[in-house]
View 1: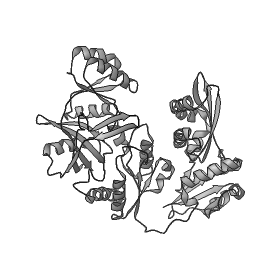
View 2: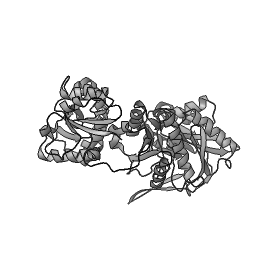
View 3: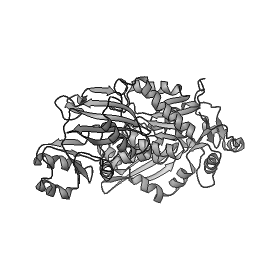
View 4: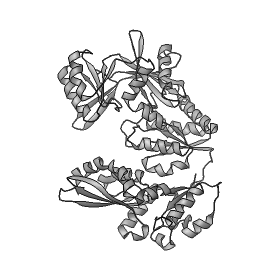
Length: 491
């Protein structure tokens, strides 16, 4: 693992905080020189990041030495010009207005937020703070928001400095730094040295993650047999991604999401990545997937792509019989998917989906008692499962709402060997996944009237202890880690 250096202009800037053996002044860091044998992370806390300042040279020299540094030269240059950072800040405005609509009085016209390593003590701004940090990774950010024409926007983003913090802000900064990287505060435990380090990205708050806690433990245990030290990280660890040799995403992915940011960052650092960014893009949108499967003559239920103007004509021509299935392009786990039984229901549900996407998919309703899921890794069949439909429901997952909230109920499941699975099902799954890449995929299929139809290809399929591993047991996790090891060695 990497050494973590904290670089400051003057040692007295660090007086309010615990001593650290890796605390260096700018001059000490310059004199440190380059040591390719010791990878390092540099937290650059110099007072100024202006061009050719100490902060700028710290970032520049760190990158030249192969050290990971926050902020990077690119981040410093991007934040110098509002014309550059303003474009990225615009993407945050819908989320910003949502927060202010709920939390702030209409009389408030300006607001300033301090963000320390992506964290803020104002819980309502926690997600927004982290998104700002992902776009502008600085230890301290001072962000000013302003309201104009009844809309909130980011008026300025400036880097902060530890020597300017008040007593309360010093406590917040220290707490955020401790969470950001505890190695600055405590001696690392002695542990076995492994050949490779693997980060497993998870979200402890996710209600329906791709892997349950039991599976994550088994993955970590299996990794050790292949000389891999696997550890769980979360969305706060983006700046540390360069410390690892590989990234395994075990959180529901989406393009407009931090999982995609992690995949892109890891790939750019030369890590082995599953899911790779291209897989997330290709699997994350059902319109793309439909076009890809159709172009390669892989059977799917009859599907039509509509915009709002085509709805009336589609219904008038009666291209499909009711019931039909409506889908939003980027839905997952049965969300954004509806069965409609008549024209009135079609129009209500389609209007709801068009509020989120300019295109929707309309698909023929094809009921089967179960769906096949074939897990594929590196273009080879890994596991096979049959997922039963929920009781008195047409999908695997049934969402039941009550006063206590939403409850998700699923049907039964059965794990089989690949040899027990119909050859045609496996063959079609392999062909569909092969169009995406050589990563880890879960292909959902239906059998009807002797034909096999692909429903979708998932870029981060479920691997849950007690479900997908019911046939292979611990061998399932071993096969995954064996593939990571093969890729590590292949680099």
